[in-house]
Image 1 (cartoon, rainbow, N blue to C red):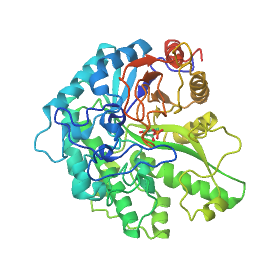
Image 2: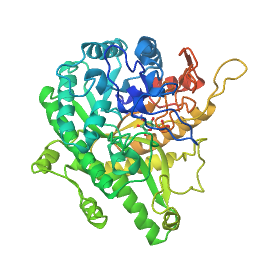
Image 3: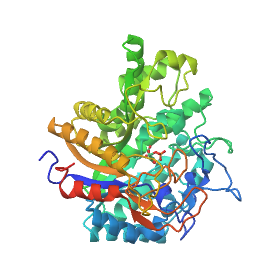
Image 4: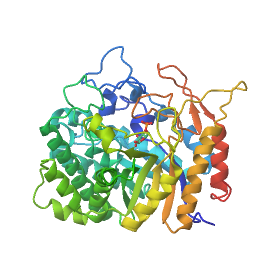
Length: 479
Ligand code: BG6
């Protein structure tokens, strides 16, 4: 049997994209509550005030807040072993600096964890999934200010202590490496800008770039301190990092393209993982900073903290691979977000190139580099689902996507990779982070909600539900 007996099959979500109840029971606003809906063509916008007559998808999202019991019952039926979710920081500390936590927020997650345990499902909790309390973004310009580290640690202490018997597996920051890119500025680091700007604004001043890498550094320090704190509260905790994993290929065998791909792999993938797994800034990051005249504000003692707070396992999201070319880069003044098209791969309707072999390659690279257990905590196909004449969603395209990725995982395990689990992204349909759409659906469970805010939130199983259930039942033997 290639999949180990205790392989953690599951599903993944994030509070701001799934939970809703954005201002209920004392929850404070978080940064995504200020980001409007968009589409693939029309970017989302960040507004400093909540504007009237404007649609903010996170406000109700998929309304897990009021549907968690039926959702978890469906996860039980699916046979899930693990459910990845995030705690919405502003539900616990509404402004991030409150003296006492919000009791109703604390109680909500207790209920969720209890419900999960009823079905023998382990929670895997992301402590911060693009969800900085909005007040911290306003007051401190997000993670650029070191004081946010202490706010995070206070929050960490509360949730570690409160849930220490209910949650064993934690991830500190979702896709922490995104902070190394301009598109992580608002979403990942909570750096607010003036307001009214698009979510992924590529324009950055020199100072903003310094601030961004400083903010990322502050997250590294916060993560390392949280790992140490977590282990002191419950030595059984398993605390992982979470990296946006992307296999980058050179467009041609021109060594210049190979060097560009190497730099992208280093600065996009490995940089953050190296800090969090190995406990120090890698040499190539130092040289990148020198070359680009980037100044990261660090303090004495930070290096020791990073060394001490290394993670127990490496987790990552994987959706697509990327191709980089020196020629194409010249044409876009170095501001490419996605690279160039790969002529060998098909892309989803949202342009994400589907590459299961890239997943196997990435698993090798990661496990070879770190030698610690690895977990895929996001993967899936985001696409529009149409109902057939029988009223059902026959999503054979999603089944096919999953099957191909499961086969790649199976092969990697046979080849010796210590893969501990897989949580499929958006197990129940939820809001897309990049476009704010519900239409870009990932789930094996459909949610009746559209992009204009219509729908009654009822849930329906898609064909992929039965497929995934069978995969879990047979522990991946029958794909
Ligand atoms: C990951 C994020 O980048 O990709 C998720 O951790 C996100 O929050 C997922 O939803 C898929 O991206 P999108 O933009 O299709 O929602």
